[in-house]
Length: 315
Length: 315
Image (tube, rainbow over all chains, first blue to last red; front, side, top):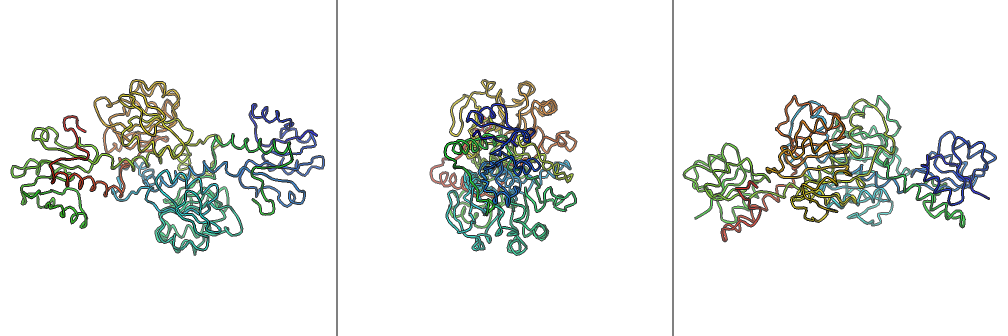
């Protein structure tokens, strides 16, 4: 039987040809109702996705997402119907790591003040000792997976070896040291920068809460490029007000888009970006690379060697 | 004869003690008139410096600056009186390189738009293909000395190997290739980013002029962390207007401070910083390190092994 792939992710002509050479048929979003059975879905669309997945004529056995997270999929239905899900974990890490380094340099190298002074035409040099080198900042990264490791690697290029926090405290390449989640107290006492790069799990929801922030005494920069729900946003705003935290750079939020009336927009020591740190035109190729590798194995022996998720765990 | 060092650069108590242990006497700025003869000047002050240097009671033979440039010194008098000058070249390069990477990430990773959108409470995601990775940007660095090399080294950590432009086109560590100043045309055709890190010499004044900018077709980012006089500011503003250049990050200007009425402040695609990229509290130690090394050699055999400048050339 020829596999029919519903492409909910736009494909360039040559990408389409490349996929068709494996022997599959590509079905466009517009044609999904007339071409069945669909057996594979590439990408997602919140209207077409569930409709095509659940249509009785289709027999979807595998979804390849173009995202790292899979929490927006109808996971209960997927689990009940033995559909396998592979994700694009890892693809976005280089982009997220680059943006994170940009965040850190923005605050450590005085750009936050420069941008505000520029708006008022103020030539206002800081004191020479007011600026630091990123090289010397003590960085703690929560989450030592693909994103955390990519950030650590870029920091290493600045001569900076961060500390890591993960579930078990196991050592990780590029990190000076690593401790488990319940042993982070000593690290935080001396930290200048804290970066959240943890996935969303039951353990990480509101991990960064009032108790967490209150142990900090003038942390230079807090970064969230993990999940919005990991941070109690109100507690963070209080921490910024009481200078437990001096600056924050945030790409993810408890609710997205961030409410137009949120006070967070106006904090002078906060940089808000609209959940975009993972974006890069360079991602298209590796996403397709994952799909092709899985597709070729799937057609060969039904296996999915790259980024197979555990639907019960949700990642 | 005991050497008397006029300290025009503030010294912490332990630094003072450390210097005195070599056997020199330290004279503070306030006491310069009562303590002669002064034989060495450390740092500079535009009032006390020339007065102490030229006072008939003093016999200054050596000035150790805390800056890389020495163009603010009375070089003609210095040359006529055989005073030697050592500078702090190299000390500021790590800081300038970190800020330069910050500039690049600011524009390449979309922060310029994010900052403006934040001011208006706009949650406005770019298209996924609108952002790039710094890793893939084709970077050309003018000047492959200490600053250029420090920038290249940080770029290498992003997997980016820049091209260099220098006087002779000689190869330099960390650069994929290097060409001479009159052979830069081919490099520029494919460049995404151009960084000026050249010193001020007769060759480099207005090197970046109308002719230079007109050969560019939508250069992503132009950076000046070299000298203000290397760039024809009016030509750059035109290039930004006609999109020969899409974004610019500037730390140095033809006249500093940048005039309050300059239109440059208001360009939405320009980041202005107030000649601060070299600032870092981490610089104090290496500056004193250079002075101590020179002082120890000077007391031993009258040599100045570190950063001796050629006063006739001005650097």
